[in-house]
Image (cartoon, rainbow, N blue to C red):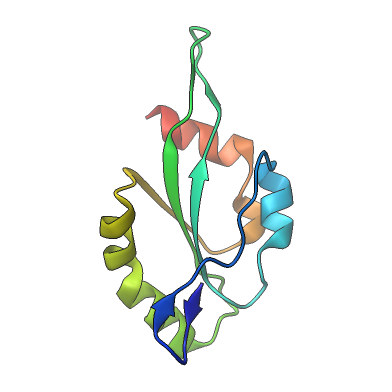
Length: 106
């Protein structure tokens, strides 16, 4: 999350082995978040990989100043983390395996 007072990106929480649906439930309704996710991707040929995914969660209900703050720092954070796949969601309910898997297989 971004600390508005200090203008710093801070770790909000860290989870191990969390399901996407559980992660979606933990997201705040009106506050954007940056999410770095190591996702277990099962390929059609039986291989398994763990791509790193950068998710920018920016809910429609977030106030304009927060949306602008997070949007303006997004590229900086992406460059810092060097995560290849970049996706955005506005609704936490979107964050499911059925939504993410096809995007990673492209």
